[in-house]
Length: 331
Image 1 (spheres, helix red, strand yellow):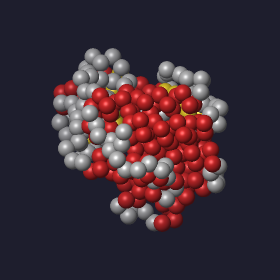
Image 2 (cartoon, rainbow, N blue to C red; image 1 turned 90 degrees about the vertical axis):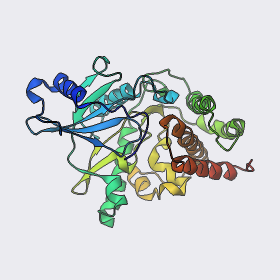
Image 3 (spheres, rainbow, N blue to C red; image 1 turned 120 degrees about the horizontal axis):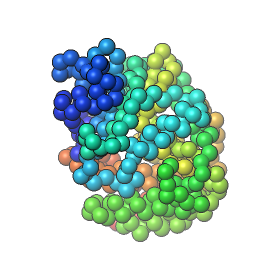
Image 4 (cartoon, rainbow, N blue to C red; image 1 turned 135 degrees about the horizontal axis):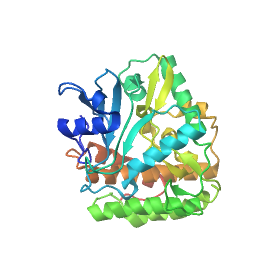
């Protein structure tokens, strides 16, 4: 089970009250074995719910009100709902149907929503467990790239978080994103292994490349294989949209392997996306996005309350790689 203090688990009694509000008393399940936690996520708690008539749904609950989260994670479930609505309205990318959203915080101390249960395999888990043939893995990676390109076709009103605050330039928005993460780390006393000013210096060296991004696009950010569902060799759902921003499509997770080999070969994703050789500006930007990701991986372990250091150590290794590649000496 993926453990994190942000997981807002609820009693059977509370889950039944949430089901009744969403679907009505006639759908209240019998017995107490109607909810099964979906355990591979890191942030929200999610349950697979069986309703009285046998239908299934997924319930996602945001972190408890008293748990501190990263700056970018404040109100993140509302961002997810807005993102899913945008994707449904403006693309053909498959996302689960939202059945009910409750932002009142009357039944629990957090936002929550119910969505349709997608009866399919988690693509990333199926790949890691060796349950898919090589040709299906290749085709799935390419389909993810094509779907991600369609997501990026949505043009936004500003750079930065979907609901705001907005920025007129991508340089301003991305700088704020990195600064927020560094401040989150400082506030929690996280050792990055590097001085924050050294990281800021790398950004300053390449910030001019950010000015080549003139149009804010919908960026999913978190579209890894494990956030997609596959059935009969086709991607049938994209999940977890809460980190979406208006920005540069090169920030998408599928491109991360360009800079960080530990994230896997991005060739299939890039082929499906239609992305060829990167220009010097694109390479500079992609490197900055990986730098930001590495800092996030390190900092968020403190906010999740992780008891082991595996994720922290992995993030430190990725940050070390990027910083030394940029010409910095290890402290």
